[in-house]
Length: 140
Image (cartoon, rainbow, N blue to C red):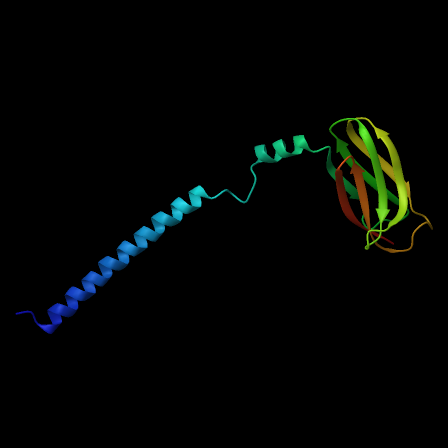
């Protein structure tokens, strides 16, 4: 005849075995689930492949905050028509900076802002075809 103590020990052992089985199943299913899910981060190769499809890359607006001149640099993957505009926070055009055709390769442009715009936060909008890149700048 089993004593109460022996029954408790048996039940506790079964609970431990059952708990370990659940833990091992959840770890295995978690790793299977994690392996089957796409990664949130792009590898360098994937990022380069994505950049090949883009017309405008590496857009930078330097000297932020801007005092007197806006410097805009970017890279075009092929010759195309480009527009560069200074926009306010509501998306209204404040100052057209450039409109024209540019050759492929690295582009560097300087634009005077002296007394043309008041101090504040603006956006430089570089557009070519259906592609648009926007960078935030501050003008003093």
